[in-house]
Amino acid sequence: MRFRSTLIAALAVAATTVAIPATASAKFFSPSSFWNAALSKSAALDTRSPAWVQHLRDKVTTYGSWINTDHFSTPIYTVPANQPRTWVYIENWADQYQQPFVSVPMPANPVPSNDTDHHIIISQPSTDQYFEFWNFYKGLNGYGALAAGRIDKASTSQGIFPSVTGAKFPAPYGATASGLPIGGGLMTAQELQRGNIDHVVEMAIPHPLHEWWWTWPAQRSDGDSIDACDVPEGARFRLPSTLNIAALNLPPVAATIARAAQKYGLVVEDTGGSVVFPAEDPMNMATNPYPALFGGKSPAEVLANFPWSKLQALKSQPNQAWPAPNFAPC
Image (cartoon, rainbow, N blue to C red):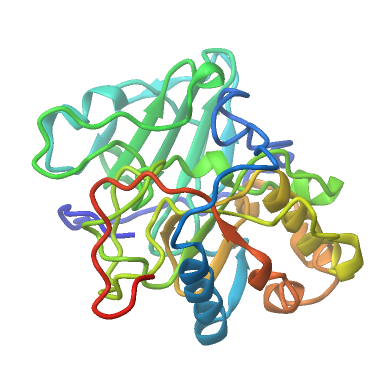
């Protein structure tokens, strides 16, 4: 993801691993939110559905598909009611951005994802608060990040960040390019272990439609494609309810993702180097469960026969009129 932010002057992230169990489910938000509500079998499709599905298939062919686990993924830290709180300095262009992060229930030795995004999620069920950070770091004077999001009363929230008051650009809070909370569609290890994801699954894709255009539930975009028919951030896909997933003989993890795509859908929430399904980072787990979950296969092998061609794009709610294609309509 990209933000208009200052560079980090110094990055000194602790390398301590905390042995805690994986999060059971990423259902941080209201059961009625788009993240957690099952799709109607007759949900309306977008007029650009064939074009978007074809573009998505082309991206899979060109860039591959993957499941992010220990890179460009996100560890989840669940903290108790008595967790000490601290200030997290946010390096951002809007002065109003800082106030929600003056009191964060910080876990001991928090370690973000081991990549250039340095994502981290902190959840405190006792206060019903959800926090996420992008480019999170620990410096000499405390904790900082380049961008962040906080949702109070998370369990009754619709799981969409508000906009930052007084910002010059479209600027909801949050640690993704689309402004959507990472936790809403993040696959957890326990979900994959039990073979059931009971919420929307998020995706990152290469070169989404240009950042001037996005569709609800996205609140912004960092896309760079000038193809007017390309996939925007916020685009939602589903597998049709009539598709017999069992007959596809997919590996267990791919079948679990496919069933979630059929019941809850997929949403494009960020830019990625390939077509990616992010999973919970094992950074703070006692062991990495993914090699066993994948049956010794690479993520690309797990997704090798995923039914991309069967996807359908749900009706969009664009932030402005879609760009007109140069030649034929999408």
